[in-house]
Figure 1: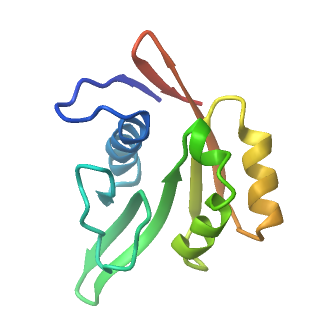
Figure 2 (figure 1 turned 180 degrees about the vertical axis):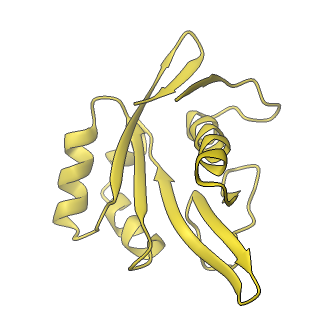
Length: 135
C-alpha cells in the first residue's frame, strides 16, 4: 500500500498515515470509515470512542463496527501510556490493528502482549521520498 499524500492541512506523520490507511481500507473492506486526527475530531458513533480509524457498516439495526486501528509514531510507541490507551480504545470481539513505524514491530508485539491487548495485525509504515508505504 503506498500513496503520495499532499492533502491540505495534514502535516503530522500520524495524520498522514491515518488518512492513507482510512482511504485504502475503506475501499478494501467496502465499508464506511471514520478517522480521528488533529483535524477530524468526530468519533464514529460513541463520543467515548477515540480510536484513530474505525471501519463500520450501516444497517437497519444501526451502525455496526467492523474493525478498528491505531496509528503510532516512533514517539508514541515509546510512551509508557500507549498500551493503556490501546486497552481503553479497543473493544473485545472487534478486530484491532496497529500501524507502527518500520522496525518497531517486535516492540509493538511485546507491548501488546505484556498489556494483554489482542491485536489482529501489526503493519509497519515508512516514508520514501514523501511516499508513504505500508508493509
